[in-house]
Image (tube, rainbow, N blue to C red; front, top):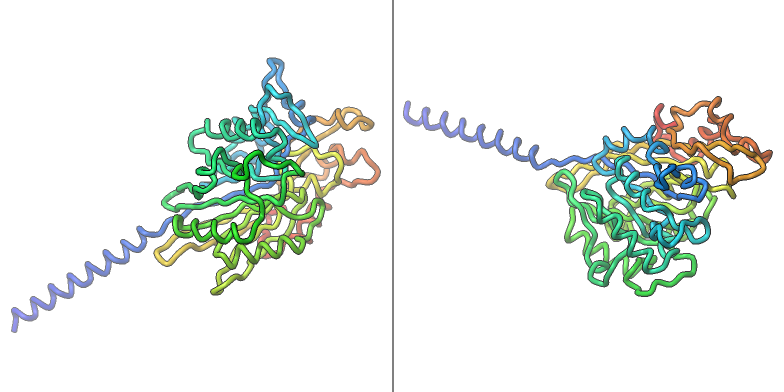
Length: 380
């Protein structure tokens, strides 16, 4: 009898050990990563002239300085490089066919961004040579993932993926158009096409833990998503995309969870608005951008998106001669939470009668557009 008791005790001890091991193993199978994204890095001539150094180089890094700590703290930091890096030798330019200094890439990377999108309406502004130059520029930086434009059919057909902290993420990119400039080869950039998107997402889901989409869409200057945005948000959700990061409208738009097939939910940030920019044809809404932040958690059962938060950002700049928009200067990004009404009084937009640039107005726009569940004291 004593022998059986001893055996039972040993078996029970073994069972407890195995249970503890299993629980520990499950915990070890949980992977977490933080995500940070901003909108359009749109480098108008007034911006790169403000960054011009005496030796002919450009230094944009001080313009991003106040955001650097938070950007670098995230495991994944995304930016849409709206104005193409077509090659300095082609001559620098602004709207309508941009060409941004190569130095912007170095400063974007030094600021902490490690995921860069190039699929937008300005991607072909400098033709095939410019497109290839941009790809080559970003490929130069170790640890930086660039996607959105492609060198070959093989590159386009390969699902763009990167690994971060044990999570394999596919990043697909689509744009509504390229300002009536047709690509020399169709593989160079992806346009919105429902059937192609379904194929891409299905393939991406087979090869990754999580599927994200960079969507360049919407109406410029409108805070509400249009019918096409809502249509494709549903297409993405039905296909099983996890997150959609929207850009292009140059103003902020809502964050929503969109329900797809089989109760799948897709987090859609319809537009993050402008990031660093020198847009002169708009108003205070164009100086207000934002970033979306969340945590990604991977477990054996799948991916969970948690702790979704919004923070508004301001592109600050001043002006030497109010009658000459080309004299705008002192460009710098600020979190709206750190911006003050005293600082806003110095903003160049306050030199025109039709605009009123105040922190209070920026807060009001934020609260009107972004649902309260994504806001806290640091949001504005």
